[in-house]
Amino acid sequence: MTIRRVPTDFRVEEHADATFRESMRPAADSRTLHAIYRLEKTSLSTPEATARLAKALAIKPGDVAHAGLKDKHAFTIQHISAKARDIASADRFASEIIAPAIRASLIGWGSEPVDASIIDSNHFEIVVRGLTREACDRMTRHAAALATPDASTLLVTNYFGEQRFGSARHGQGFAAAHLVRGDFESALKLLIATPARKDTGARRAFTRAAATHWGQWQSLLAAAPPSPHRRAIEVLASGGSFAEAFAALPMIDQRMCLDAFQSWLWNHAAAELLRQSLATDPGATIEVTTDHGPLVFARADAMPSDLTQLVTPLPRKGAPINATMNADWVRALAVILSRESLSLDQLDLPSLRRPRFDTGDRPLFMRTADFSLSAPVPDEFAKGRIARTARFSLPSGCYATVVLRALGH
Image (cartoon, rainbow, N blue to C red; front, top):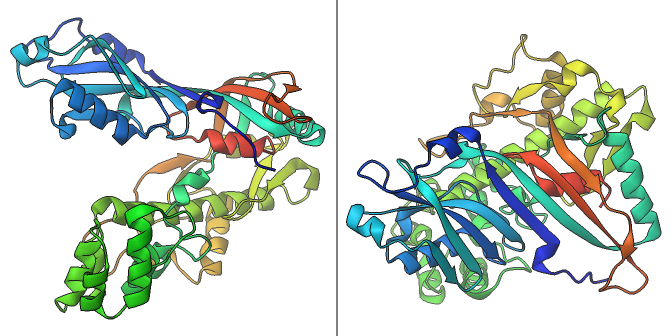
């Protein structure tokens, strides 16, 4: 059944922390030339929205910064900063900007561009449609199982969302799994020469040309349309190595393929840890199937307190995963790496200085504050089906789609 949705079914509002709010000034001066806008956008990616804002302000796109990337297929509210060249330019910045699919309101001036550090939390309001009575009841049961003694807070395994895995080409694997083994050709083929059903436009034409002419580099250059990935083929056509061709890809593509594999490894290690920890109590876990492997969630009252507070380093070469680390996490990660025939020391790129796997940490659990689930109502777009609205707040870096998975949706 195709579920009809509207952009306002998924609403997210970014909340800035108190330090940032207090640092803003009501007017520009020589030290505060970054205009802070509250940006509302509908069915646009954050880069698309910031490009429209830059055009409206007659500044370069690079002079507009965002705190976080917000979902494209949604109605979102976030913070954007726009840099003025000088006071005279700042005086010309409009207090309100309305352009197709965006509305920006000037809320103050700062000395620095905004970045992710200013985000305190994100508040979500999500309408879940097309529910059967069984699915509706399952949401209620899962919410009750995940609730802490404060019923307005859910304890949810802090998995990376499936949108993180966009560089995994539709079930054909992760490019970084080849990169860490030194197989740059296989990685490159996955990234730029593996057609996918959802590819459109120039991307579709390029991946199909690359798949057809792989190894015939001059023919591929003649057949392939303009693309940010064309430089990699030019390197190969001039006699360069596959490692050099990978290094010629846009850095965002290089970065994303490492992030995807690292996040996938972390997700599987987290699921394995919960299975191990709650193996004697089968009723304590909730398992949800996804395209990238099962996600395991746990009944809040069954979780050992040390695990609810656990913060883990992301898998990478040199990560501080040793005898001082939580022993259960060490074992779980070892199981996942063994399944991939890898060791922690292999999670690096041979022969390249960059990119590198993320050196950050990640809490094993997230706490969804201010959680509420509306009463079931008839879905106005699907006769005989039910809709419910979930409302909650999450810390920066956590995924609302994971909360929906935990609720059985």
